[in-house]
Length: 521
Ligand code: ADP
Image 1 (cartoon, protein in one colour):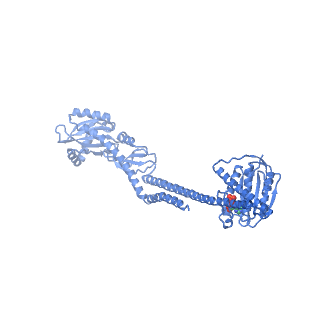
Image 2 (cartoon, rainbow, N blue to C red):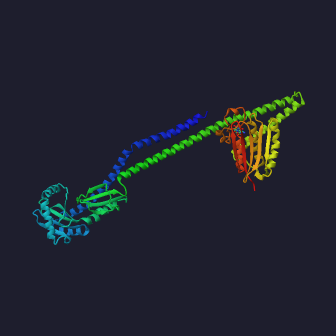
Image 3 (spheres, helix red, strand yellow):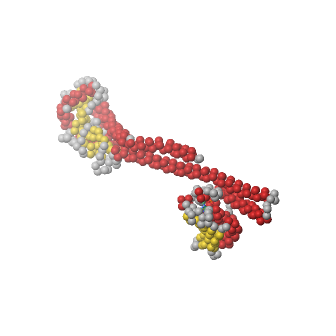
């Protein structure tokens, strides 16, 4: 009857889970493509960094050369500008300007480190001009079109740590031709330190390792502490192509990094799937529980109606017969009165159970605890119940340990628990007519057991019988009416008394219910 609710919750769960699962499967199958994409992004980032460092060095170089091609080109003016330039740039060692007839026009710089005098520096430049004539002609040609193109030469024979950059500059007399060549001496190490590394540090977000290296493999600068790091990206320095710029991600490789990103992504995705799956299972579980409870409640209403109607009909019928004076004998009359009394007691018990249950559900049930001598209380309770048992032909066997200590309990509540157990023993005894009651004590507990030899309870049902509204669905109890509240009340009463209830039962051989009370002090 309540199936649609369950179906809706299953469909709702699937509506959430299926798209997420499909997305996860899609991500899983596409992981190689995603990895390549991430790899590409990182690769571009590294390239951009190298490009920016190179561009910065080039800009630096252009500020030097622009000082050489300003409009005022008298030797004095050149001299002034060069001196300022040299002062401002420690990596710039000196400049020699040679005219088109290979005659030095001007030389300025800190040449003493590697040349005896400035003339030797000029001779070195002249030698390199002669060596690279053809290329310089092409550079002149390009310079006329507005493209500045330097030619870098390593002065191996003089000092490998010094680079000579040749660049065309227009002569002082004529704006275009003939052309002169400026030889710019650069301290390679200092240039790397002052310009290249500084720029890289400005850009680096500490995740990158950086190095500069000569073509032959010798490092000029190495930021990584690893002994032999593998740099994944490298570029020649534009203005000094014998130097390579190298960059990598610290402590890992691009491939490892992209793989770990994909792994983390998939891990979270699977985690979310799992959580959602678990959520749906829990949801379905609680919905199915709610559906079962709703079904049990409606069964309960039907059972209670029946439980009320049957005794009421009987009471009414007997009362009417008595009222009309149609009862043939005194004996019969007594029987009618007894039946009316019994049915009233049954109704009272039923209504008490329902009222108690409702109070417990709304947390309004209150208990009055007092010291109770268990053996006395049990004897009194059984004396009251015995008549009922006798009427039905039951034989009650008792075994009571008179030395059981007192307990703190609500008399009415524990009597109700006992009555509920006895009522069940009577109801579910089948053809058997024996009931056994036992009161005993252990070191910490007092145990009251009610045993019958009736239909018993299947093992699979035993853990459910204490749930509210629960009734065993076997055909054996089909005709025995009840509300499914009795044992749930017993369980609640025992909890309130800090005790517990237990059950041993075998189908066809009977059941024993145990009430354990903590022994008082
Ligand atoms: P009710 O007896 O009103 O149905 P209870 O909560 O007292 O409700 O019991 C729940 C169910 O446990 C019963 O419907 C019955 O199936 C089973 N049960 C309880 N006591 C016994 C017993 N002594 N022997 C067999 N079955 C029992």
